Length: 480
Image 1 (tube, rainbow, N blue to C red):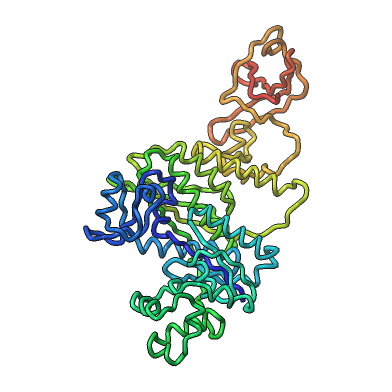
Image 2 (image 1 turned 135 degrees about the horizontal axis):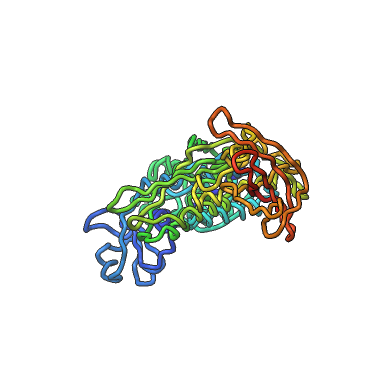
């Protein structure tokens, strides 16, 4: 077995700052109240002298504009769960190790990703795109990988024989022991894990507890260390607090991109695509602003989802500044895999058309972008109907049209000179007549003789002569 540990050293801070580029000093308080301490802080706050562990009052004295947020343990647990769901695209064996680690068993994935180095790079780049600070470490046992990652050592140890030398040099602080036990070890001169393993086991068990020895045995592979497998939820939901209120919808795209990256990792792991996404923007003094992205086809492409969302946000007016972004996948559909083609094919063309339609709908609204379908009626103005784009019966018909695609909203009367119709000059009749007599059943009956005509500037027109009433000529459409 081979384990890859993802350790998030400032997870308490990341759950608030990954939604925006925060330039103001920010500190995470360990608890609410006056006696709280600084649990974590960002770089601007660190530059002002704020340090984890110091009293919050002292931190506020060092930075008068310090923004303080109370630690949210529930948000941290939810973030680990979403990272675990995202990581399932690399291996089916993922486990959460609270409070700040996710473990991946990657021995069976190395061939798929052509080696440990490339898999490592893929995971690391993906986590950075999600907005987290992370330390990776690889070892044959899950606990050893965790200890190396906690110590900030990005080691890549693949075999048990190479584990002991590096493991022994780790500080006992990496074990995360209780303060009392940690102090006792330091009092007896034990600073490293190698020194721990050299203690007499019977005496160490009596004075330090059997739990310490069991942990060392699990880390070195001398005892089993089963980890519970993470099971992804049936649906994807995520929310992201913003470090500062966003006054414009476009500013929310940065935060939403993080959530979409998590979503697409979840979709890749479960073999699904999303066709309908619901967004909710929270406000301090108003009800949530909600909108839905309805896609023509299910997808798990983050760039495409980001582009569609950008178009939608550009026409969204916020009633008040937004404080959080949440999304939920309302409709998931299986997304079958397909082979890549060296040359463009019909499938790629269809996907490009679908994505164009989705971006247009996001910008203009769903009702503004429609498809056309034929209807069973001889009257040209009644021979079509609106439908979903690409769903019409004539969408796959590539035969040359016998009628023009451009019809006027209503027929336009033409001048008649010397018994010939004129439109920017006299018309030459090229084909016809096509007689249409229809509509008697609904009171809108017509009786017309249609012709294909050309004028002196070589425009090809569709004209007809009325067979009733005044018998005049009318222009009804254009071929070109």
